[in-house]
Length: 163
Image 1 (cartoon, rainbow, N blue to C red):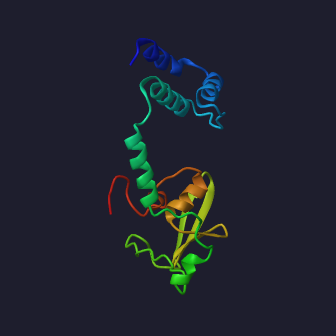
Image 2: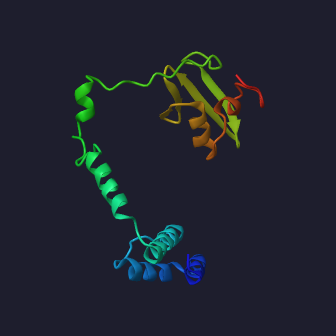
Image 3: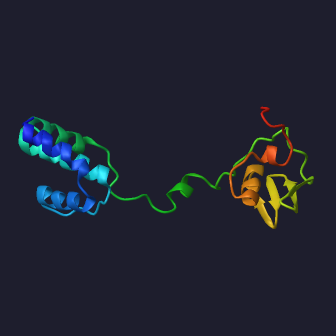
């Protein structure tokens, strides 16, 4: 690699995005919609090297064209209802029963920030505040605003114990 090319490529990360975009347009002959600095630096470095040292050989170009021609590429998206043609009904997700949970119908209570929380254990989920949640952790996140173990939050397991 010529020394001036190495210096030019090494200087790319220090340029502003606007300068990289202008250089991209000059080097590639077309503007870019990208504002991603890392991507612009990589593409410009590649193009500058390709221009200085030569691009792909004709043999490599032909092989790439052969690979593209042989590829089984979908040119149009599948029909909107294609997934429903192979199945009669959409499958329902079966969540395995957790032996740490009480039976459906049980009301879990907990005080949190001065409020009494009540969550009803359902056959497939948990009812809290008029909504059905898939897991106790989802209920705990709705209450606290951050992720935490629902089993620990509602006192069904001790801290640090594994099921």
